[in-house]
Length: 244
Image (cartoon, rainbow, N blue to C red; front, side, top):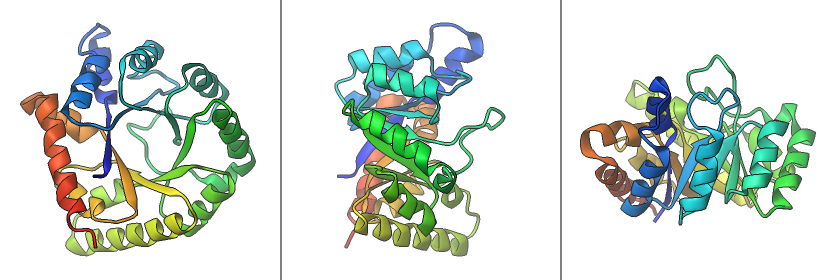
């Protein structure tokens, strides 16, 4: 079974719309955990638009499953990660004006910095992952900086409007996954995935972990978090069954 990490950022987004105490991302995370999620993902942004520092602390204290902390590679966030010690840190690009993450990291622009960040995380026993696009040069750079894993950005795939575009993006994802796996990198994927489009991604043999949030949280409004997570797991298993 491919591991599913459920991102609960947008539970916090609803809470922050009123600056109140509900809905609670921890409660949502515990429900996702109970429904079968392998782990929980949260993105602590520099502007604190949704998840707050206390959320990270409470999640680390209460979860029985692994906590994956998404963050920018800046000193403030590094210090928080070193103190909280999540299971894994996933470094992502971040711009204040963006609605959501718009693309993968450009590792070529910051290799030396990322090597230092990765070494600091690893000394605390934290796994080190990088959110990147499917270009060969980014995969090769991820290997050079010592990442334990890479998470491919499936945003462009999720936005495809034609069958031809879908097949082209899936072909890129398959090729990139084989390349990364061949270099000894663990391969994850995420961004924009739904219970419909996740099947083809889950069918790629090298992909062992998926990070999915917005669709699961959106569906939970209608179905509840338990059923939303279970529906996603069913779709993921359908894809896994197609692996050769």
